[in-house]
Length: 502
Image 1: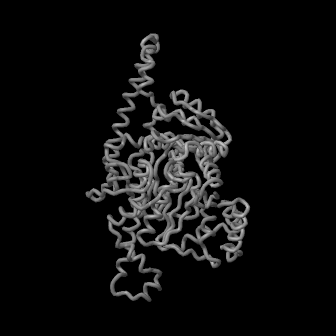
Image 2 (image 1 turned 90 degrees about the horizontal axis):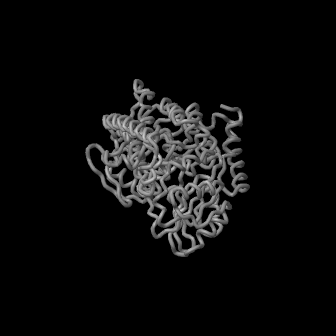
Image 3 (image 1 turned 30 degrees about the vertical axis):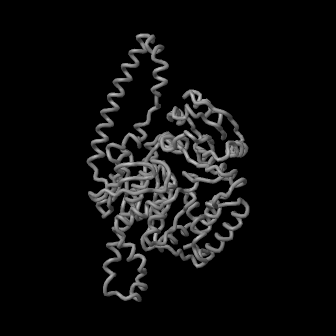
């Protein structure tokens, strides 16, 4: 322990307060300072938690799924520490801790649920071995940071390898499912899976399934020109057909392999704010408050890890339930709420999942002069495709804001793997962000009309939301574009403080 560790909470809180005043919101800067003056602060603080640490990582859905897990555990009675803003580097976690610890360094919580960036999860597990690890997927996101997705999977494997309790994996993502091989099952680590019913797999493609979509109408438009291609091109088409046959065989093999893995929670069916889950041979149907079909699969992931925590709580706490005094429970650090939590039923978990609300910027709705403005974060081909499939453009105005800052990823070529033809009839009212013209060009190739292009994001947001009062509006945006859009909306409407400023 650092000699000055007794002063760490005071110093950190002072830096955090100054940072919030200077920046108008949360910042990872206090965490950076504390990591320098007291490198053991993170591990020392999280070691206090009786139910340990849940680590959530993967390319897509980390923030929303972390929110789901934390909200469900809280609904079931636990005190939960989490990093709710998506500040998912280790210094971001430290900054969040500084807001919660007492001046004596005490963290009043039973369990921590932490979202970690794929790369920073490696640094985190060197300091803290998670009790539970939930790994969601591997997609082509931020290629400039991680390189090819196999490297991203290797980064996530370090988190699975360091986990001491239960590793929860996406059965349908072959790169994630294979990480069961690195879990220390010989030391008692359990591996669980969440998965999809076969009828839903086409809705949730893995990265290997992603191919640039050729729209049916576009194919019809070009059919005559294709028929006039040279024999050389016909040979290329034949080669392409052979390649696709090989791809189909590989997918079939992967599907068969996935079906052989038993899923602890299976998403069986989806509907408008409704979902059905298969658990222990029973079907549970529920309404949900979350937006987007992709979040229903995230809910299956969250249910799987919550079930693992409940199972461990039953083994840990229920033996103390009878013939033990309250005084003895206090002495061994067990509260009545932990015992109550251990009695949680599957239906109680389903009910808790039904009440989770969207994380900021992920289906968050902000009222602007009577118009509901929905912020939809998009970071990669699958996420964008599923967002477009989940939110019908009819009767709404649409805006797309694309940035290429570090947190977004510099390489925006993935936009060409998204099919935008669903926007063809309604068009896009506004395109903005640093890469606005790249986005406008991409829409032109899918024959989607664009009304206006404005690279000045704040000005574009104001113009867009104030047009057509009362009409619902969708804003699809990358991460930093979402933060700046929220800030712009905060100047003209009431925006909740998510710890990132308004």
